[in-house]
Length: 122
Image (tube, rainbow, N blue to C red):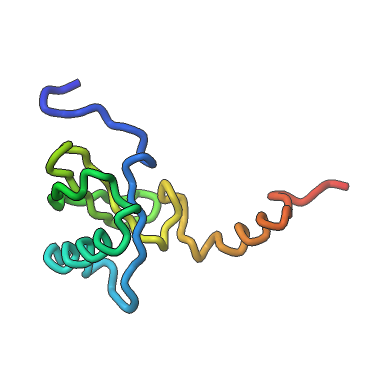
């Protein structure tokens, strides 16, 4: 391991999923640091359970992560106290960026009622 770098953890345990504000252009909005910080501060105040406990001590915007699967940028934050980093992605994307929610919602709805993944050969 190189000096100054920390070992990476499992992606899912350092991810925060938040709803997108209505009627925004995500690609433009994600680049607006001041606007994004205002939105994030509002979300922290309204839904503190969605964030790690150390968020109370403050955070920095810590760059971006670009998903190869979804070809989209997401923000990262760095907690001031613990120096942990978290990736923040919109609720329109499935965990681990495996797909967009609109692409999988019907299949997930059917799984709720026990419909199998594949067609049976009977």
